[in-house]
Structures are given as C-alpha cells and as structure tokens.
Length: 159
Length: 145
Image (cartoon, rainbow over the protein chains, first blue to last red):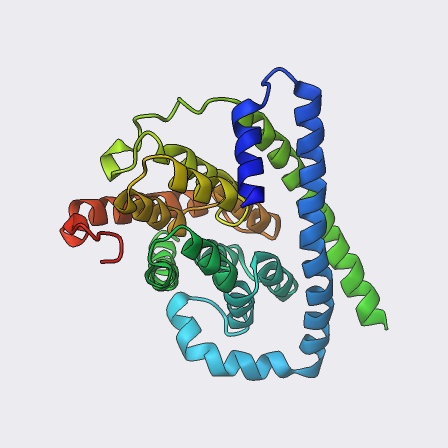
C-alpha cells in the first residue's frame, strides 16, 4: 500500500513547473524499465536461439499448427504466445523477434498479446481492486484469440 | 559459443531499440502526471465511466495495469467509484491498456502500430458499452455478474 500511497502523493502534489526534476524522474524510470526488460529479453533470446538449433521448435510448431492456422499465424508463434500469456511481453518479444515473421503475422501476434499477457501477474493485480478477476482473465483470453481470428480475416480481405 | 554471441548481440540491440522508445515515453508520462487531466472529463461518460474513475482509466490506458496498479487500486478505494464502474474500468483496461508502450515495442520488431491501437480501442469501447447497456450489471452486486 505504501507504493500506491506514494504514487498518489506524487500525483497530487507535483509542481508542474519543476521541469528538470520531472525530466530526471522520467529518465530514471525509463532506464530502469528498459533494464528490467533487458533482464528478461537477453536470456530468453539466447535460449530460443539454442532451441531453434535443436529442432524442438518444429515439434511444437507441428503440434499447434491446426489451431494457429485459424489465427493465421505459423505454428512456431505458439511459443511466443505462451511466453506472453504466462510470463510477460518482453519474454514474448524475445521469442518472436528471432522467428522473423511477416508484418501481418507480427501484427496479429501483437494484437493477441497486447490484449492478453502476463496473466498470473495482472490477474493478481486485478484481484486487489475487488472485482471478479477470474472473469476478466477469461474475457481477456477469449477476446485476444477472437481478435486474432478477426484481424486475420480482415487482413486477408484487404490485401 | 558463436550462437550465444550472436544471440547476445541481437538481444542487446533489441534492448537498445526499446530504450529509445521507452525513454521519451516515461519522460512524457512524468510530465503528463503533473497536469490535471481534465481534458477527457466527459468523453468516457457514455460507456459508464466518468469523473473520479477517469484518472484510473487514463492511467491504465497510458502506462498499463501493472505500472498503474498503485494509482488504480488507490483511486478505486478512496474515491466514490462504485463496484459497477470499477468493473467497467477494468473491463475496458483488460482489452486496452499500456497502449503506447505495448504497441511501440511490437512496432520495433515490425508490427503495424496503427492497426493495433485502432483495433484495441474500438474493441474496448464496444465491449464496455455493451456491458454497460446490458442487464448484466443491473443487480446491486453488479460486477461479479
């Protein structure tokens, strides 16, 4: 609760004219967020490069292929979606970036992942607000996949 | 060993690209935080979110559920935001949150950002409006319905 109280204190009492302090805080936050991301991205990226070499991705790809075709994504993107759902977006990006997908595929994956990611963490956060977090999580997963299907159809219509 | 070095290099380049996107965003957000966000006051009234719930909504849309959790939880608990409105806010945010950062980090690896933002915003508004208008939330215990 101290974190919440602190952010609200900043929110309420910040002097809008104190530009240098604001700039500094923004800079520090930006660097620290990027550092947090890099800590996830770098190890995942390396692990994925290795997995690519072993041919394990092909096994996973084949398994998810029928389902992924519905969304219009190649089978190997399933790995990226799972990383995004269960871990976070940075892990998902680290998985998807080395796969070298097309703009359409990346946009569809990004739409799905944007709606539905870091489910364990964000469901825990949502629970704190007192609303039905499980219902919201189901809504997110359902609409993320539905959006993928819809965007896939729309994209094909317009190209 | 070569694989590790190439992957290390590529992932560090990716991280550097992300830094260039996140840095201006976080600075911009700090500036935004100091201002009273009256600009969007009445704009979301039609989907059942207004006044005190708006700070939570705007915070969530811009920086996201996890980072904005403090602000969201606090303003939901202290201001007179009802359970129904809280549910609508979180429903909207479920579909459409951290819209700038989430979008840009995917643009870095080649996604179409315009489609992403337009799609998520439209879906969130349609869904929230539909639930707000429907009978689901008419019960006193609304939100769990």
